[in-house]
Image (cartoon, rainbow, N blue to C red; front, side):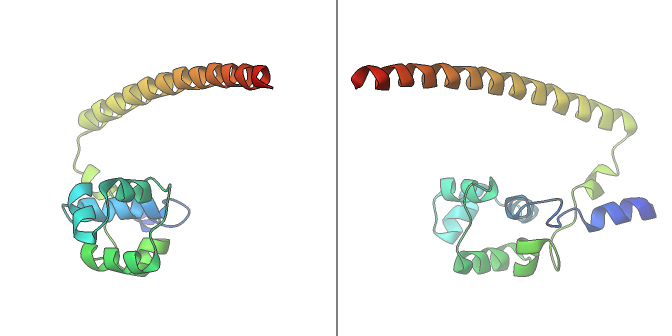
Length: 141
């Protein structure tokens, strides 16, 4: 690994690069656990864990300590990306050939385009529903 790659990897899970949810998901995956498995071990619903990993909610302090212990990372790493954590994902990608990497990038970009289209369609639908709601509210007065 070049010095430049090493410098990039050092900050991969830092507060500037990743969120608590990103680090939680990475640690769970590195531990070989599904969201359902980890949620069960923690005594929470899978949807709660998903909201933590999506940064829609944050676990309480006692759950954070349990998560760090179960996943074999430091609490400090979960919160800030500093300390004992998991290796950045790029270490696994270093073994990919240029062709394989290009194909993976192409698939990812294609999926992102599909999602973008779906988001735009949902945004338009949301606008239509908001208009309908305004009309209904205005007519109810």
